[in-house]
Amino acid sequence: MEFRRSTIYMGTTAILVLSLTGLMLHAKAKVRASAPLFARKTAVVRQLELTDLCLFTEATYTRHLSMTDLSTPFQDAPLSLEHFPSGGLVGPPPHLAQKP
Amino acid sequence: MTRMIERQRHIMDFTLAALLRRKGKNGALLSVYTLLVFILASILFFTHALKHEAALVLNEAPEIIVQRTMTGRYQTIPVAWSDRIRQINGVISVHPRLWGYKYDKDFLANYTMMVPAGNPPEPGSIDIGSGISRMRGANRGDIIAFAGHDGQPRSFTIRNIFDSESQLVTSDLILLSEKDYRDFSGIPEDQSTDLALQVRNPREYATIAEKISRMYPDSRPIVRTEIQRTYDALFGWRSGLMIVIFAAVALAFVIFAWDKATGLSAEEQKEIGILKAVGWETSDIMLMKFWEGSIISLTAFLLGTILAYAHVFFTSAALFAPVIKGWSTLYPTFRLTPFIDFGQVATLFFLTVVPYTVTTIIPSWRAATIDPDTVMR
Image (cartoon, rainbow over all chains, first blue to last red; front, top):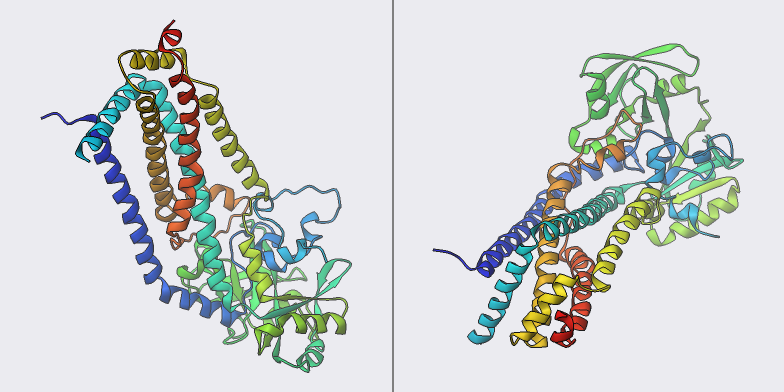
């Protein structure tokens, strides 16, 4: 038996839609299951008085992004260029960038 | 109703056959389109999940941190400041924090050394993050030596290693006692790195920060909401690499739209002419072109989004990892929690599917309204 092209297309699309729906449900289940994990993480943050995520360890101003100042990224010379890739990924903290 | 569905299916059959006749061109178009959706969706999923995680985790960060600056750079802060700050109404407690960095020349890695507020290791022992443990192959009970501020090495026994599940906040941490840290860093007894404040009422953060600034003009208070906002602005569209990626994706979409909006190829126009000559209505041709745009864009959207989800949440965004690692040799290997919602997927749909479908319709309408005889000639 030969299927019509539209039947094959609609079947494929239905499989893709179902897969996407399945992934959305997977996301929901994972978020629900990760509540105890987040409770443990926040307990560590509270206990150690941490202020930042450990995303980039190459430069001090991107390791503790919220604690940085405006001069550290420029190192010791006003003309020194940004040489850490993470510096090109993140923006400055809003409380430093905003005008008084 | 059945007749209408059957009509749509016949047009769809015809459209699919027409698309398959130009397999190479349409296959390339679908691949590039899927890749664009994949890149956009990966960035959207990754940044949203990371920001959401940061907001949740940093909800327990200190309410206010007070730093001291000199000539625009931060300096150690006198511990005596905490006595005056504690007297400000609304401040529950002030705790001097001791922390700093250590560059390990042997492993080319930066560590964050810190004295914890509670349960510090005994002098001579340390707790380390799982990133350090992995990188150095160090386990509980091993001895690690670091050169202090005077160049003399100090040996520490590893008391504990943080769980790998908390890597996103502890990967590069080394916790040690206050005595060891002061000896190691050379920070005098009367100084600390900064002060962590506990405040009774969140609505008082700004007022207390202002009072501290007035009390000590060289101080810099950072409130918790500012810490959270920092991570909310992370990977903003204006930050270097992001603007390059978004510009490339936008340019690719403009090229798509331009290709479609400048008109159809002679072959496609001839096809439309023949269809009109054999009795197709303008509305039938418009419908065919609608299905053509929808089939390509919907398939690209579904494929791109599914692949992006797998990339970000099943492979820990493996393609982004080299960019995030940069020059660092010590980095967390974390798996993000998939904080995605229907709104995000809907936004992605409207940003990618709708513009393409619309640009397919306009030139088709122009071609479909021309006299078939003129088109075929």
